[in-house]
Image (cartoon, rainbow, N blue to C red; front, top):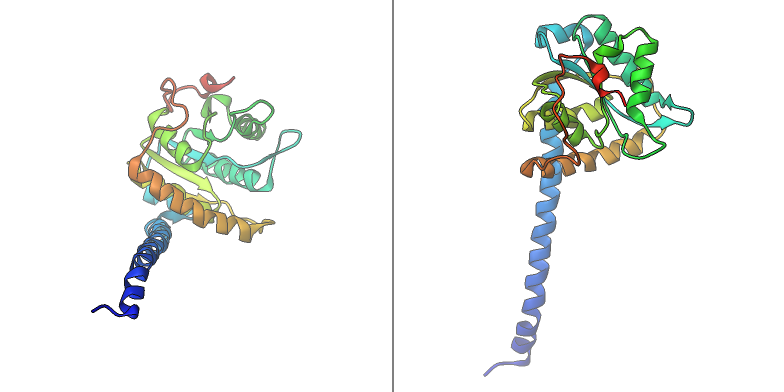
Length: 234
């Protein structure tokens, strides 16, 4: 004969099952998050290079990819973006690549990262034909995807801040692009701790995206990265 305690135990068992399932899901999510970040950082850190070691690691890259960042009122690059541009400019002037691809957000009226980036480089002596603009680089994943799918890039030097380079190189690996990175970190930036925390989430997001490799928001006609960058002018 069943006792009252047996009855109570049977009533609680479905609830305990749900808790176990939720606990297992939470553990799986935590493990995935940790793994995604460890793989992104540890798997790419040996390809985050100093400028003087780039040539030994990669001969004749198709381009220097400079990833976009915030633009301030009046068409001025933010400190983070200007540091990326300055580092990319040094690599170009050193002859490490013949072309520069600037990739950022130009998806809405009144906000334009890529024309600001190209103008900045031209003002410092880079011929316009050597600077290609990717107007639809709305995320790290989309910038890297479009570099290959639209511009035909197979080998590249990526320029951004160190914390961001790991993810960019990870995505390049998953999309079949040979890439090395040079970090642009000449100073400390306001909000660095928050930016680092967001990057942890960004690595998890892109690890998931790279499983399925969806097309970016826009593709469009192919552009030869070895041609004239002014064809990307608008």
